[in-house]
Image 1 (tube, helix red, strand yellow):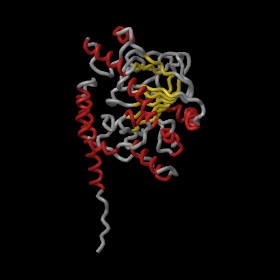
Image 2 (tube, one colour; image 1 turned 135 degrees about the vertical axis):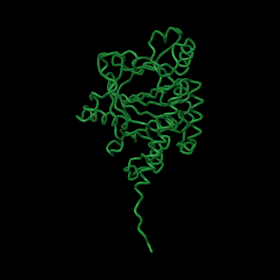
Image 3 (cartoon, helix red, strand yellow; image 1 turned 90 degrees about the horizontal axis):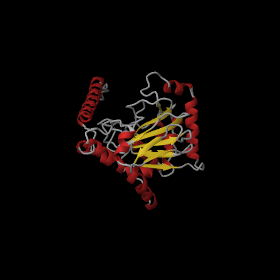
Image 4 (tube, one colour; image 1 turned 180 degrees about the horizontal axis):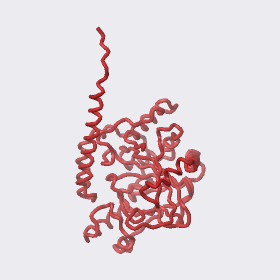
Length: 330
């Protein structure tokens, strides 16, 4: 006799609560004991990798050619940042810029950007919801101009998109002790923040300014030895940076609309949004490894439902499913 059993809602809810509780406790523990330096933090991160070893089976498989790898080695791997100019001939990039300008002009976007709850008045942000099928061009963009090749090579074919954000800086005020001063981000051992200029960026509208990985390590080690700083995320004024060595060089990331910048903000000192004479509009993708404390310890499938119905190659669907498994919509 067939019995139609009702689902045990209490069990399912309890299981969901337990997973969330476990997620929170594990991540909180590691964030609390991580010193955010280059030595102790790396060892702790290796132990966290061991606990999440299942993620090693989710590597993205993508073919690279020798010329692309050489370009990556000269840029991202050595310096920690790379810029790709827009020659105006790539329709996917041009359409992305146009789509984002349209999004920026909407009343709903303006309300979010200028909400009183914004953490930074000098750099306002608004998440872009990739669950909306109209925003699929933001995902399709990743398959253009060898972008995935660069990301996969730098992040060892283990990358996840944490968030996609529209950034707007008016460049009117300077706030000491904030991200307008040199600092590194603590989200992961290494990461890539991929930025697309939606408005042209020059020296007069608060461009992102970056110091190479090699010089960054020199600066950090020197300041740590002098007991001026302990963490990578500590905000440092310009004088302390350039007092270390006259040979310290920085790169100002400027370019016209559609210019793409990739920066490992976990290993490169950087700042942005300093006062200028006009605003700046940027689109930012944040790519982490699955081993970041900022991601759930136990992942869930976050792939938008419309992806399965798209008329694209199965290989693309698989890559997107992999990249989006930790995506943050809110």
